[in-house]
Image (cartoon, rainbow, N blue to C red; front, side, top):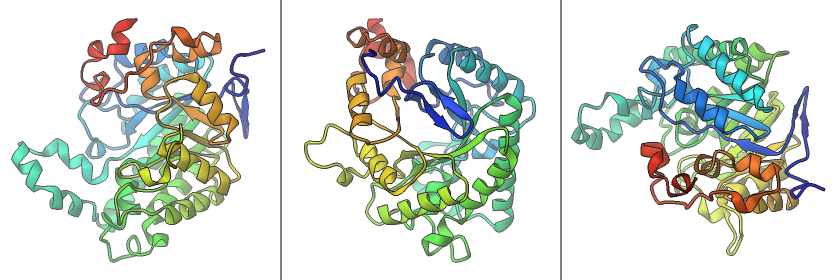
Length: 356
């Protein structure tokens, strides 16, 4: 009998079977060429981390102006397809389902064009104002996501995920703190989620019969006055009704720590996943703070989610999933939960990674 029987149980979603319940979530490593092309570092990164049943390629920019960093992967040119296809192939060769996350940073993309830190500090209101795009700009964004979804299918990905969390474009629209529009995209929640729903419909139409559409949704913000849980859950339900195949649950701008009961072994984000799971009929991915396989197994047992994403744990030890499959948890180099994750600056300084 497997040491982690729930983690090792396959999950059928429409016409796709995820071989186990471990998910490597999209985590940007900022190793792309300046034009967004896949680099050898990406191929090695995903090849070394085989084992999860589902691997979602990091947030991939749908347009050059939507990048948060010049070294972010891109999917806005047809010439990106070849490198992305190699990534999908490597993931498939490792036995996993291959997903890709489509990303637009919205107002946060402005950080790349700041000339100095002084302008960045004084430009916060300009950046928020930049989110108030004209309708023609929103049409271009919709087209960019639809074109990116087409390229993702061409590259061989099984799942296309919209990034709707962590304070980026769709989080900005969903949040009443950041969405100041007075047109049909602002005000009540039905308007604030309009762009996300439009993009989902476009993507579902584009990938139908070839891939599954999903969304990483920030179900609630951590900031007072931001997206509340009620509006986040109602948005999740509407996404489900519009054809979403499963939901990847996270937080919006800031983690809503109030969601986590005192003494719980699970993170606030996992509790968000549990709440969403209870309201939805589609599968839910949840995670956050999962460093050891025992916690992941317990989270499935406690019905916190249907699949568990393991982020920094897999960054710290690329063989995390494989060791879990083999029932060797004691050999995992466990993430030390450093206040600042070294992996994103210089992975050689990661204490857990250096142990290997």
